[in-house]
Image (cartoon, rainbow, N blue to C red; front, side, top):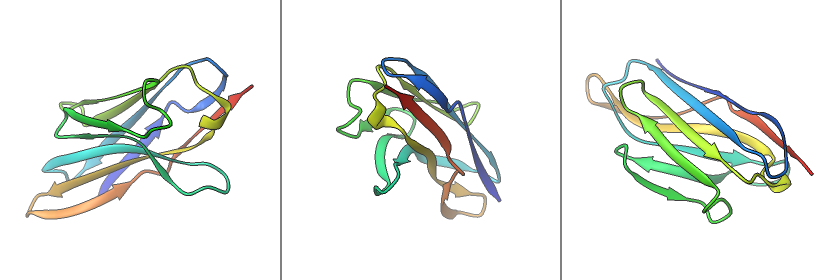
Length: 120
């Protein structure tokens, strides 16, 4: 079993900042990539940011220049620093990981999500 647990969501005013965290735990041999996705009411889930091999990052167009993704390899923790937040950033933010377990089993895992609400 592998679990992803997000934290750091909450209510913030427009222009403010939040830092999300995602802790991966369980039977993990190595993690290929981790990412943040979000789902706003009535909208499809979309990419916020993704990091591969701990270094190569890409961002969704709507957050470029306002978010920074990072990963602590030793702690199996993913972070998302979000600055200059806008009301349209309001969504449930999900952590995602694709990884290999012991025994060479490849899986993709999602967290339960953390709600970010940005007030105007």
